[in-house]
Length: 311
Image (cartoon, rainbow, N blue to C red; front, side):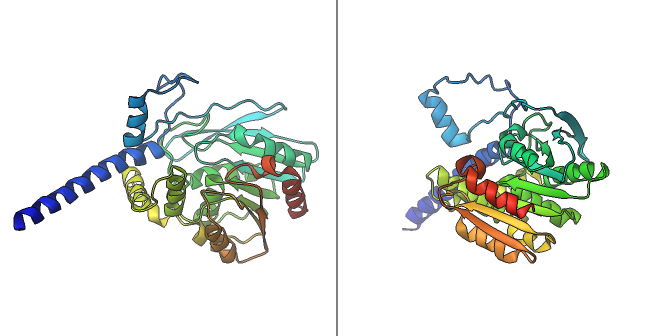
């Protein structure tokens, strides 16, 4: 009987170790983006069965997305983080601006991915500044910390616009971009005029769980292990990344927007953030939208709510 017990215990330990090895690979791939062309990926080429198996076991390789250029006049701006990483931003100006909106994209995205929203802010009379987070688009680096270190990127963009003499700064972020905005306000005591948050996750563990759900896998214990190893690999405490708590430090009006069909960010996460906002706030739910551009999915509603909020 003791021998059987030892065999069972040894088997469980081996399986646990193997699971952690698989999770470590996934955690690395989830927080690492390769430079364009580095992987030799051929667009449209169908993967073999073995390549699909490797992706399942060791994570999916992801390259930085290339930006498409704006179809209006813009200036390229380069910023540098404290560790020397180069960030690229675009400044789009309008005559007699009412202020400047800073736009921040989501995980795996790029600044040109939020151009549609930027153009609408331009039409409303605002300059816009779009930034590629580190490890995204045309910015340097390959490591993404899902908003933890990226809060510095928001601070650099904020300081750049503020040094231009701008008094009316509006921060807009979608998904990871929105979560990062809350952390930047918390970390650096930023004081924008207004903030628009679209589908920010409530905490990093919940964001990982949302990604796991989209892969049709059990959230636990995978999300807990991924969160732990993702933070450990890159040297930060991932469980401390909590936009729902950072919301308590925001001291300006906030428009919080979420899609009812969102498979990644739950209604509970959204309500936790909303309840922790201590000042003028409004929650808008888009009934036909998921985890996607709310403007592109429901443009009339988005434009109405944003226009009213920015009055």
